[in-house]
Image (cartoon, rainbow, N blue to C red; front, side):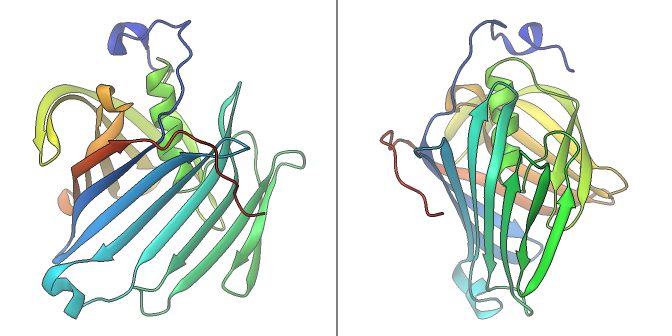
Length: 237
């Protein structure tokens, strides 16, 4: 574990909750420009987070459609545990529809990718591609970020190594903030992702950058942040 209270200024006994919110980012992926909209809302079982990416401007001539991902998860004594992940990709040439359920009683994640059944045995806590961000935010809020997380990436489990790269002042369209840099990389991957997380926004990343072989491939900057809604919503089964 990374050591927490001294680094992040959060008392170890102060259990803090995620804040429901919506956020918008300006995104550049290689030469394609787009927009990322995220929303975190309360549900009867915990939270649901939805991320939607769509091309903007002239990039709509090169790529149409959206990528939408939703993770439903509960907050437990062990942190965040996802129980359902869904994704629909209408941007990629082949497209993709994913629906995965996490059964913590049996320790299995299973579901469908398009029409193909997939299943993996989980050894300990694992996260989908959306809930892993909120696990990191939750752990930062409570002063106990881990040096490793396990990502369930559709049909395989990957260990993600995480490190703190320090603090700095950042300026994005949404404002000027003090941020802590969190860098992570999957075992065996050449992609390195850096998140500049803002404490006053519940450690929401205000800048997201992904490098591959040292070259910047993806960059997202926060353009708008709105707290709420706080009221519970009912999610589909």
